[in-house]
Image 1: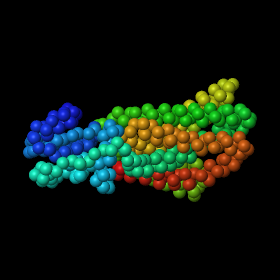
Image 2: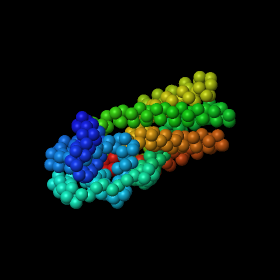
Image 3: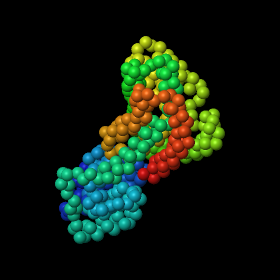
Image 4: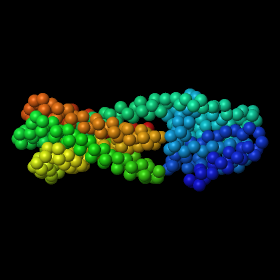
Length: 374
């Protein structure tokens, strides 16, 4: 597949000039691991070459390259394409074919254009339209922001935070010490979660080129998200009736909670609030990721799915997600610093369980459809 695509831009374009007349231009937009792309390259394009020989110039564009993706968006915008599927073939910068083009329709169009002597008339003016932001950033970015905020308000994270604040109150950590501890705790949490996301995103990116793997991950993720949505709604109903935390299924295990509490005790005993904040923030965030990853991992899949055209944009989304993730944590430290009592925080946390579980359930459903449909 890669060898075929490698030579299309040169050999087939030269064939067009060998034909003599102005060749019909066919732009083929593909991405590694795309099943539809492989089928078009293996079945349709050779047929075009065989039937029209040099009368058609085929140019292959890997949309994993940002400039190629932007060129595709320019063409679609100029043509007025607003369909759910992106263009896979664009003939003479005017006619669009999707993921399953009918060969006879393509042959008929090329034949007609060849007889008419119609040439491609689309010329880029160097000013790239802001269609990337309109099509992808306009929806994906808000979804990432909401996901990060929901993750930061996840009952797993909130229950740990409540215990930590109680421990700080008992240990008489206040004023300047509390401020320093909070700053470095949040910093360590942010960097740790960002590093985890970066690693997972790289792993997903490395395997995204394999069609079967990518499809399997998306289907499995969608199925897991629907199960998580069901469990979240059930947790909300159970807790609303009983007000008993033991009725919540999606939470940290008792063993994991003990490990986190132990880490907090040890971190406060190191003698330095800065070092303690860094150690506790790093260890607690890593341990909590077993629970908070329920939101993080599907968001990373969505980021990768909608950011293949720009790796830098994926990292910006990841950064924005993590900033939103630590926002509730940072605001809690600020509130405690200015006098918020632990009892008030605990009451709010218990009151928040039903709402957060319901919102997480809705989030899981939306993410499942986004992953499969976008």
